[in-house]
Image (spheres, rainbow, N blue to C red):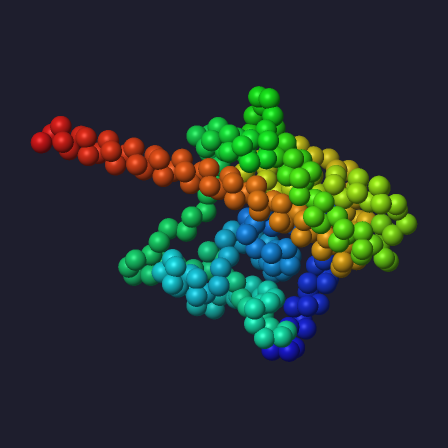
Length: 268
């Protein structure tokens, strides 16, 4: 186990270096991370390193107990750090594609997808939670949500970044410029994750230059500062979107059941 932990630790460090080398690499990571937005940043980085196409990951116990799904034979788990375990321990995630339904009682895996019928409720919920725009479409709302959410929450993370710029390309910058760079990159990164998770072509709304500052976050500490902030703030917004989608689906089912009962009553 110690050897495996060391291998995963090195993989984590190497992947961290890789995603900060250029804007395209960072965008690739964001495209992967948005699908498993409930995971911690360090988990997202390791998922990206091992299974960048993973759609929905969980531990084997969760698949078995909660969804009554079983992991396919010979499936390879995604190793991530386990802070709740003993010192230097790992746990393993499996993607939904690594599982199959049991003989009875399997539950659907709630992977939401954006659809036209969800857009208005999503925009209204985002406006209520983060402040919205005057008019505009879903893209406008997602962009504004990212900007507002970063504006409201980034100060909580800024002190951490200012304390860890040593040996990075940020080291020679003053506090004002560090904050400008941090806020701009965080807002763009959060927006990229929101657009990608909602099935939109995020690359069509950004230039490479919008993520050029990622190369300044070239130490493990500075990468964690931008990565954790981006992951946490994106999760806030994506949970709101997920809740709005779920509410529409619940209401649609309720109306469907009501209609079915009324039809049967009329027939009787």
